[in-house]
Length: 262
Image (cartoon, rainbow, N blue to C red):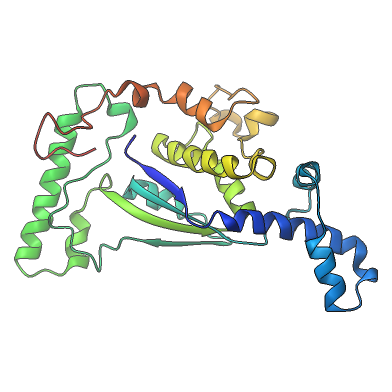
């Protein structure tokens, strides 16, 4: 899992989204002062303080956080992550490596589930993934199309995913998906994304934590019972909840088996 990488592809869009948020909020109160395009541009270019951004984020008027699109690429997460994150469809767009159009015959690269790391069961898991891909290869060799052969591909196979969303929707996805009720890989990826976003704009993305970080758990009887302390950064949550990644208790270097990939 520590080979999963995320990157914001258009960092400048975050500053633009912030500027539009401030402008949109001011527009609601100063519409009577705008009689021409020049008046609006002056409002749009008017300076503001960091505290202004922090104050606006706390408002219940979330529409002002929906101007601008942030594009992020996730490289190396599993297709299991793909199936989970793409449940978010409101104001979010995705593009992924396709089992229909791509030929994965030579691919032997799989994510090891976090809870398997360090258990001694990693090798057997990877062998099973490899067996599935051998079936895939045999079907391709027999003339079966990529799409049909793709049904053999294991959920653990690594993928490349491009996600495009508004600032508000990024916050909404992170808010829901870093809750400890989620699959650990999904939590880890979304924490890495939150880490990237908060580095770029702390005021806009500080409030992405799950319910338990600011109030109480809303899962009812399904609660994990392990609330995340308020004030922790994404990096701190990763360090606390994913200690195996820092200890390197996985076959990351492929030193156990030539078909091993993690």
